[in-house]
Amino acid sequence: MSISWWWARAAGEVSKRRGDRAAAASDESLQFQSVALVVGSTGIVGASLVGILPLPDTPGGPWKVYALSRRPLPPWSPPPSPSVAHVQVDLTDAAAVAEALAPLTDITHVFYVAMSWRPTEAQTGETNSAMLRNVLSVVIRNCPRLAHVSLQTGTRHYFGRLDGTTGRVHDPPYTEDMSRLDIPVFYYDQEDILFHAVADRRGVAATVGWSVHRPNLIFGFSPRSEANVVCSLCVHAAICLKEGVKLRWPGSRAAWEGLNNGSDADLVAEQHIWAAVDPMAKNEAFNCSNGDVYRWKQLWPVLAGRFGLEWTGYEGEESRFQVADAMAGKESVWAAIVTENELVETELGEVASWWVIDAVADQFGLGLEILDSMNKSKEHGFLGFRNTIKSFNTLIDRLKAHKIVP
Image 1 (cartoon, rainbow, N blue to C red):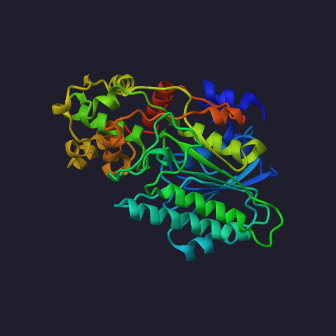
Image 2: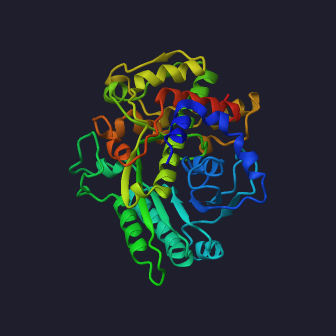
Image 3: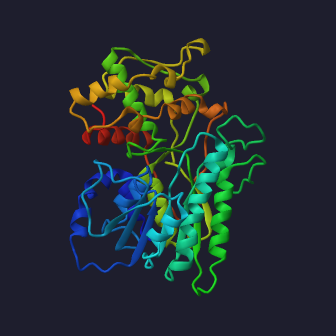
């Protein structure tokens, strides 16, 4: 596979190429080499996959895409494309999933990037494992040309749960050969569901490959994704501007000063595509981060500057606060911002998840830097990267250009 594709996207050619999608999709006589099922297509990485797969130079293409999501397409979705078909279905409903997927017998690749958050860790695990099982139980037996299934989990593989459960965790930097933790992490259940599904392809001659992708904190565009930290931060900043207050750092010194990896959503999508078509990536798990490091003390002034705000950094433990508390009851403030700036009509709860800002500002309660290694990925042939500060700025640009935030 040519290095030039990864380099061009990493070096900032992405925005120049987005317009190529429409030109490529307008050719009705296009013969598809690969057929993708993107599960979670309106999510933070799913939206990137749906945007990248139809491009004329995407490896493995030309691609036909079935874009599967629970909700209707949001108003900021790209224009309809002949190469992309939207399928709306609730993945927790096994019968509905079977009915929706049964006709799609031409699928060659599954990109499973769906995530559903529930009130408790146990409920989240049960729900997401059931969703994956519902999809694979249909596709594995129903698609004779199926070649690959990629599953997205995350770096919680190495440090565990978010509900305060204690136990041994791995020290960073995280590498893919680290063992599973002794505490329950539903990512392990999802991996086992995947492994058993591809091994149990009875009556079908062709074998199915798999890959597992473990991004760090994802920076992406999809505004209503519940874990979209960039959009949530921009909404928070817009409310601070409206109310004439400073943008205050809410969290710990460790999170303010510590080193972290970020994962650009387009980069994560590119790694999924690489793993789906490159034999070197078959049946492997890969970390996926930008390849550089950042500190929140670098990004916080960038955020403030983009909204014309004064800001303060870490000011001591006594000054810490929860963004969820500070932003409680701000629905009417957001409604006024939307009206005054002629933004896309959204509810505050759609575009801001305060819990994700609080989790990031507390370093997920770990008190250590969340760093992973990209060595295995590079050794197997994936050379994509991103400049995190540029990525952060680019996503703010997109949110403003689509009139999600002022």
